[in-house]
Length: 317
Image (cartoon, rainbow, N blue to C red; front, side, top):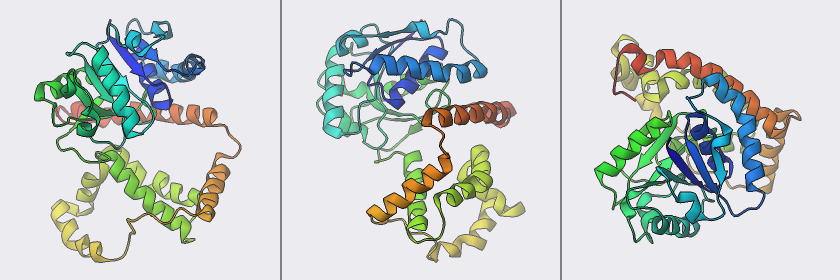
């Protein structure tokens, strides 16, 4: 039975824990917060019904989780280590250097960072810096399969290849990012949409609820199967993307978007917070988590029937 060692047990760290347990792995976790273990076990209990619906691996059990009393004890016996401490570069460098010093050089170390480049994270690692890579997942980690893998200056091809195999063993779909860039791929796309959404609220064009509706009932349904490029390819009719670009390409010069974020004033913050609280309608975050998970379990069951391998297109993402 493989072991995932998790350092830092916030929402993302706990998501990794739940996913690994569901896939029949042992998990060793460390977090200096004395309340961390209770929070993690409650998190796993809340996620487990959704994981059962998705299907558990042989030997899967929440009982395969242990909390260690130190970082060094947590990484002992690891097949893969996942770092999930807060998004502060100096903190991540410090923790990764500790992990690098404690773990055998052949054990890969993935960082869940949403924005930092792996070469920046590898600084301070003296033992085997090349095995420190970005392994960026998406919330909820225990259900969403994408993980972005990014190697740094010291990373060799064999590190990336081993990482692909290990994350596939966690039932994930690894996406290798071939060039370091802040925010990787998916977060850069989400950030662009987020900035535009803030402008729409700030300019009084739409409420948070109306903007979310535009995604939920429109483009989001197509994106969940085809993404951006293939969706636009279909928009070109029989001639595909070439005709789409000929027809709609000139619109790229029109002032349709504002990619710079608006000033985050107290007024804008209040409007966004009040809008989201209206959408939540008194439901707690844990209630909304369960509702989201129920939806994702059903949606994943559907879209997997249309993923490339279902059409015999093996080796595609």
